[in-house]
Length: 399
Image 1: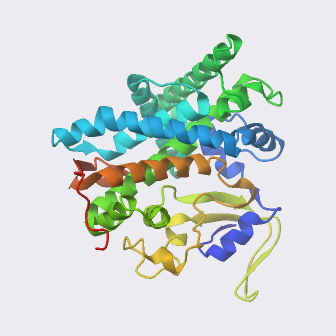
Image 2: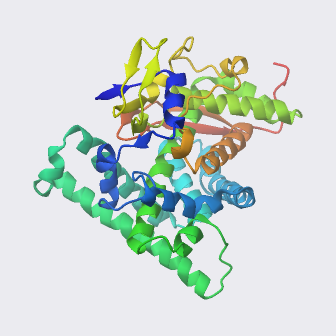
């Protein structure tokens, strides 16, 4: 029995229940990204616990500060090499492509101590797009693709992309080991360090699978959350001006609150993923004074577009101020409970820093809205913006 739950209170109760399990059978298509190897994203039981425990030290506060600094440095480099050039030449650009490449660069550097080149980064993004479409979307809608894939050119191409991503992950793992063997200032307890040193992994195939799944689960979700928010600000210049004035003002607390509201509203309106995932219930759950029951053993799906609009006034409007009335409300986009997103702190750090840096110094204009596409992630395709550098003269912060 498959049930869709859009009520936030019920979703939270189910996700936080210790008896709720991730449905490995229903995540088999996504597991195909790593050819079915047990991994931190789709597995449950001992395999998942070992992977989760292995990388947990990387997300301690002292390591997050290092990752935040890398995020800032990579962002400044991108602004200097890319955005500044676009702005000075009055040239429009594809916001999604730029932000996806920036996100890949930040994650590879911060999580895996690997400095990816622009050419290599573009190739990795292409392979990720191909495997995401095939294994996270097309195969779920057409199960026969798995059985007859050898006769379908796009499936054969996805298999090749899977092998190339595996090689890229292996290359980063080997580069880290080479650095540590030569004492070249490898940082302890980075994600790659935790994966490389943990003895619970049976072999390197498990390590490589976890690296690939970190790339798959983090890059598009983070990048498109940021890209969509920038697009909404470009479409709503009055909201962008409010944020800009706050960021350039003297009240840091007000600026942080407005930035948080804008980000949460962007992710509410355009949630990057279709849902939190499918869970198998370990007990009965009751709704509406026990008049409705979801029985034990049911598979439950949590559709993001329903949860982010459930009991929300004017739900299709971009209105960051709504969060002032409900400052503690959460739409669970990073999940909750024991299977919450382990990398959410790094993702939010990147989105927050990049958004604050760009919105404080640049105005954005939509040149072409492009199209919306869903292939595992909600994407803005061929959306083109123009950026105009803001002069030192500030807008009146009282407006």
